[in-house]
Image (cartoon, rainbow, N blue to C red):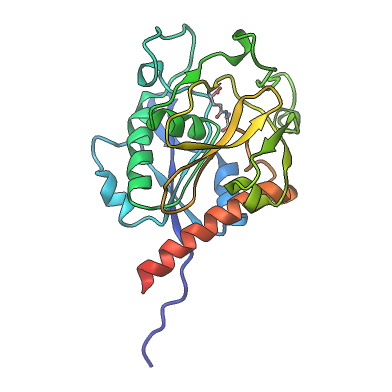
Length: 257
Ligand SMILES: N[C@@H](CCC(=O)NCCCC(=O)O)C(=O)O
Protein backbone atom coordinates (compact mmCIF):
# COMPACT_ATOMS: atom_id res chain seq x y z
CA UNK A 1 0.00 0.00 0.00
CA UNK A 2 1.43 3.39 -0.97
CA UNK A 3 2.62 5.32 2.04
CA UNK A 4 0.09 8.04 2.74
CA UNK A 5 1.91 11.07 4.10
CA UNK A 6 0.19 12.28 7.26
CA UNK A 7 -1.27 15.80 6.98
CA UNK A 8 1.54 18.01 8.12
CA UNK A 9 1.08 21.13 10.19
CA UNK A 10 2.21 24.30 8.41
CA UNK A 11 5.78 25.53 8.89
CA UNK A 12 5.94 29.16 10.03
CA UNK A 13 9.14 31.17 9.98
CA UNK A 14 9.73 33.19 13.16
CA UNK A 15 12.15 36.12 12.98
CA UNK A 16 14.72 36.06 15.80
CA UNK A 17 16.58 38.76 17.71
CA UNK A 18 20.32 39.27 18.05
CA UNK A 19 21.40 38.51 21.64
CA UNK A 20 24.92 39.14 22.92
CA UNK A 21 25.59 36.49 25.54
CA UNK A 22 29.27 37.01 26.29
CA UNK A 23 31.48 35.98 24.68
CA UNK A 24 29.24 34.97 21.78
CA UNK A 25 26.35 36.26 19.69
CA UNK A 26 23.13 34.29 19.41
CA UNK A 27 19.89 34.49 17.44
CA UNK A 28 16.96 33.89 19.80
CA UNK A 29 13.25 34.45 20.32
CA UNK A 30 10.77 34.43 23.17
CA UNK A 31 9.21 31.14 24.25
CA UNK A 32 5.72 32.64 24.66
CA UNK A 33 5.51 33.39 20.94
CA UNK A 34 6.47 29.84 20.00
CA UNK A 35 3.96 28.31 22.42
CA UNK A 36 1.18 30.54 21.07
CA UNK A 37 2.03 29.39 17.54
CA UNK A 38 1.88 25.71 18.50
CA UNK A 39 -1.01 25.90 20.97
CA UNK A 40 -3.32 28.50 19.38
CA UNK A 41 -2.33 28.58 15.70
CA UNK A 42 -1.48 24.83 15.58
CA UNK A 43 1.55 25.41 13.36
CA UNK A 44 5.18 24.38 13.60
CA UNK A 45 7.50 27.35 14.28
CA UNK A 46 10.88 27.49 12.55
CA UNK A 47 13.34 30.08 13.86
CA UNK A 48 14.85 32.30 11.17
CA UNK A 49 18.42 33.38 12.04
CA UNK A 50 19.33 36.98 11.27
CA UNK A 51 21.49 36.06 8.29
CA UNK A 52 20.15 38.28 5.53
CA UNK A 53 23.72 38.26 4.19
CA UNK A 54 23.82 34.47 3.85
CA UNK A 55 20.28 33.26 3.11
CA UNK A 56 18.19 34.39 0.15
CA UNK A 57 14.67 35.18 1.30
CA UNK A 58 13.14 33.00 -1.38
CA UNK A 59 15.09 29.99 -0.03
CA UNK A 60 12.97 30.36 3.08
CA UNK A 61 9.72 31.56 1.59
CA UNK A 62 9.47 28.70 -0.91
CA UNK A 63 9.49 26.27 2.02
CA UNK A 64 7.44 28.24 4.57
CA UNK A 65 3.66 28.41 4.85
CA UNK A 66 3.69 31.69 6.81
CA UNK A 67 5.85 34.21 8.67
CA UNK A 68 5.54 35.50 12.22
CA UNK A 69 7.20 38.67 13.54
CA UNK A 70 7.69 38.75 17.30
CA UNK A 71 7.91 41.71 19.60
CA UNK A 72 11.24 42.81 21.06
CA UNK A 73 12.62 45.38 23.47
CA UNK A 74 14.78 46.72 20.65
CA UNK A 75 13.40 49.42 18.34
CA UNK A 76 13.43 49.71 14.57
CA UNK A 77 16.31 52.04 13.71
CA UNK A 78 14.93 55.50 12.79
CA UNK A 79 17.03 55.61 9.64
CA UNK A 80 14.41 53.30 8.13
CA UNK A 81 11.59 55.79 8.64
CA UNK A 82 12.85 59.25 9.50
CA UNK A 83 15.83 61.54 9.16
CA UNK A 84 15.74 62.33 12.86
CA UNK A 85 18.90 61.45 14.72
CA UNK A 86 19.10 58.30 16.72
CA UNK A 87 17.71 58.89 20.21
CA UNK A 88 20.47 58.26 22.79
CA UNK A 89 20.22 55.15 24.94
CA UNK A 90 17.74 53.49 22.58
CA UNK A 91 18.20 49.77 22.04
CA UNK A 92 18.36 48.81 18.38
CA UNK A 93 18.79 45.50 16.54
CA UNK A 94 20.01 46.35 13.07
CA UNK A 95 20.52 42.67 12.20
CA UNK A 96 16.83 42.14 12.79
CA UNK A 97 15.92 45.25 10.81
CA UNK A 98 18.05 43.99 7.92
CA UNK A 99 16.09 40.73 7.73
CA UNK A 100 12.60 41.73 8.84
CA UNK A 101 11.95 44.71 6.59
CA UNK A 102 12.81 42.86 3.38
CA UNK A 103 11.16 39.64 4.59
CA UNK A 104 7.87 41.47 5.26
CA UNK A 105 7.67 42.79 1.71
CA UNK A 106 8.75 39.45 0.22
CA UNK A 107 6.24 37.49 2.33
CA UNK A 108 3.29 39.62 1.18
CA UNK A 109 4.54 39.57 -2.42
CA UNK A 110 4.71 35.76 -2.24
CA UNK A 111 1.12 35.58 -0.97
CA UNK A 112 2.18 33.93 2.30
CA UNK A 113 0.33 34.74 5.56
CA UNK A 114 1.98 37.25 7.91
CA UNK A 115 1.29 38.12 11.54
CA UNK A 116 3.29 40.84 13.32
CA UNK A 117 3.20 41.55 17.07
CA UNK A 118 4.36 44.79 18.69
CA UNK A 119 7.82 45.41 17.20
CA UNK A 120 6.74 43.11 14.38
CA UNK A 121 3.71 45.33 13.69
CA UNK A 122 5.91 48.42 13.77
CA UNK A 123 8.29 46.76 11.30
CA UNK A 124 5.37 46.09 8.94
CA UNK A 125 4.40 49.76 8.98
CA UNK A 126 8.00 50.85 8.31
CA UNK A 127 8.53 48.16 5.66
CA UNK A 128 5.64 49.59 3.64
CA UNK A 129 6.77 53.22 4.01
CA UNK A 130 5.19 54.35 7.25
CA UNK A 131 6.81 56.00 10.28
CA UNK A 132 6.88 55.61 14.06
CA UNK A 133 6.72 57.88 17.07
CA UNK A 134 9.99 56.98 18.85
CA UNK A 135 8.66 58.07 22.24
CA UNK A 136 4.87 58.07 22.43
CA UNK A 137 4.96 59.38 26.01
CA UNK A 138 6.85 62.52 24.93
CA UNK A 139 4.38 63.54 22.22
CA UNK A 140 1.74 64.82 24.63
CA UNK A 141 -0.86 63.21 22.36
CA UNK A 142 -1.26 59.72 23.77
CA UNK A 143 -1.99 57.92 27.02
CA UNK A 144 0.78 55.87 28.63
CA UNK A 145 1.48 52.79 26.52
CA UNK A 146 4.61 51.59 28.30
CA UNK A 147 4.59 48.79 30.80
CA UNK A 148 5.69 49.36 34.41
CA UNK A 149 8.89 47.33 34.47
CA UNK A 150 8.88 47.36 38.27
CA UNK A 151 5.80 45.15 38.21
CA UNK A 152 5.65 41.35 37.80
CA UNK A 153 5.28 40.10 34.21
CA UNK A 154 1.65 39.15 34.88
CA UNK A 155 0.98 42.84 35.53
CA UNK A 156 3.21 44.15 32.72
CA UNK A 157 1.36 41.93 30.21
CA UNK A 158 -2.00 42.22 31.93
CA UNK A 159 -4.99 44.24 30.69
CA UNK A 160 -4.02 47.89 30.05
CA UNK A 161 -6.56 49.58 27.80
CA UNK A 162 -9.34 48.92 25.29
CA UNK A 163 -9.07 49.03 21.53
CA UNK A 164 -12.01 49.58 19.19
CA UNK A 165 -12.10 47.28 16.18
CA UNK A 166 -13.04 48.80 12.84
CA UNK A 167 -16.50 47.47 11.91
CA UNK A 168 -16.36 45.00 9.02
CA UNK A 169 -12.59 44.76 9.28
CA UNK A 170 -10.47 41.62 9.41
CA UNK A 171 -10.09 41.70 13.21
CA UNK A 172 -13.79 42.41 13.78
CA UNK A 173 -14.64 39.42 11.61
CA UNK A 174 -12.03 37.13 13.15
CA UNK A 175 -12.87 37.98 16.77
CA UNK A 176 -16.61 38.63 16.43
CA UNK A 177 -16.44 41.58 18.84
CA UNK A 178 -16.27 45.37 18.61
CA UNK A 179 -13.80 46.04 21.41
CA UNK A 180 -10.92 44.17 23.03
CA UNK A 181 -9.10 44.89 26.28
CA UNK A 182 -5.42 44.50 25.47
CA UNK A 183 -2.06 44.70 27.16
CA UNK A 184 0.42 47.44 26.32
CA UNK A 185 4.19 46.94 26.33
CA UNK A 186 5.61 49.53 23.96
CA UNK A 187 7.36 52.91 23.84
CA UNK A 188 7.01 53.45 20.11
CA UNK A 189 3.89 53.48 17.94
CA UNK A 190 2.49 54.24 14.52
CA UNK A 191 2.95 57.87 13.49
CA UNK A 192 2.28 57.90 9.72
CA UNK A 193 0.48 54.74 8.64
CA UNK A 194 1.94 53.39 5.42
CA UNK A 195 -0.28 53.68 2.37
CA UNK A 196 -1.73 50.29 1.59
CA UNK A 197 -2.32 49.46 5.26
CA UNK A 198 -5.91 49.38 6.54
CA UNK A 199 -6.58 50.40 10.15
CA UNK A 200 -8.12 47.49 12.07
CA UNK A 201 -8.11 48.86 15.63
CA UNK A 202 -7.45 52.05 17.53
CA UNK A 203 -6.83 52.80 21.21
CA UNK A 204 -9.04 55.30 23.03
CA UNK A 205 -6.40 57.99 22.37
CA UNK A 206 -6.58 57.35 18.63
CA UNK A 207 -3.30 55.44 18.33
CA UNK A 208 -3.40 52.82 15.57
CA UNK A 209 -3.21 49.49 17.42
CA UNK A 210 -3.71 47.10 14.49
CA UNK A 211 -3.82 47.10 10.71
CA UNK A 212 -4.09 44.72 7.79
CA UNK A 213 -2.33 44.84 4.44
CA UNK A 214 -4.77 45.90 1.71
CA UNK A 215 -4.63 43.65 -1.34
CA UNK A 216 -2.64 40.93 0.41
CA UNK A 217 -3.58 37.56 -1.08
CA UNK A 218 -3.55 35.93 2.37
CA UNK A 219 -3.96 37.00 5.99
CA UNK A 220 -1.53 39.86 6.72
CA UNK A 221 -2.10 41.61 10.05
CA UNK A 222 -0.05 43.56 12.58
CA UNK A 223 -1.14 44.19 16.17
CA UNK A 224 0.55 46.48 18.70
CA UNK A 225 -0.48 44.48 21.74
CA UNK A 226 0.77 41.02 22.82
CA UNK A 227 -1.86 38.41 21.94
CA UNK A 228 0.61 35.59 22.62
CA UNK A 229 0.53 36.30 26.37
CA UNK A 230 -1.63 33.59 27.97
CA UNK A 231 -3.30 33.29 24.58
CA UNK A 232 -5.57 30.37 25.54
CA UNK A 233 -7.15 32.49 28.27
CA UNK A 234 -8.15 35.25 25.83
CA UNK A 235 -10.69 34.12 23.19
CA UNK A 236 -10.07 37.08 20.86
CA UNK A 237 -6.31 36.63 20.91
CA UNK A 238 -6.73 32.89 20.36
CA UNK A 239 -9.04 33.61 17.43
CA UNK A 240 -6.34 35.84 15.94
CA UNK A 241 -3.73 33.09 16.12
CA UNK A 242 -6.22 30.51 14.83
CA UNK A 243 -7.07 32.70 11.83
CA UNK A 244 -3.35 33.07 11.08
CA UNK A 245 -2.90 29.30 11.42
CA UNK A 246 -5.87 28.64 9.14
CA UNK A 247 -4.35 30.88 6.46
CA UNK A 248 -1.07 28.95 6.78
CA UNK A 249 -2.98 25.66 6.49
CA UNK A 250 -4.50 26.85 3.20
CA UNK A 251 -0.98 27.44 1.87
CA UNK A 252 0.28 24.08 3.14
CA UNK A 253 -2.68 22.23 1.60
CA UNK A 254 -2.16 23.95 -1.74
CA UNK A 255 1.51 22.94 -1.68
CA UNK A 256 0.60 19.29 -0.93
CA UNK A 257 -1.72 19.03 -3.94
N1 LIG B 1 10.57 48.08 21.26
C1 LIG B 1 9.31 48.49 20.67
C2 LIG B 1 8.36 47.28 20.57
C3 LIG B 1 7.93 46.82 21.93
C4 LIG B 1 7.84 45.31 22.05
O1 LIG B 1 7.83 44.58 21.09
N2 LIG B 1 7.84 44.87 23.30
C5 LIG B 1 8.04 43.46 23.57
C6 LIG B 1 8.85 43.27 24.82
C7 LIG B 1 9.48 41.90 24.92
C8 LIG B 1 8.56 40.76 24.46
O2 LIG B 1 7.45 40.56 25.02
O3 LIG B 1 8.95 40.05 23.50
C9 LIG B 1 8.64 49.59 21.48
O4 LIG B 1 9.09 49.80 22.63
O5 LIG B 1 7.69 50.20 20.97
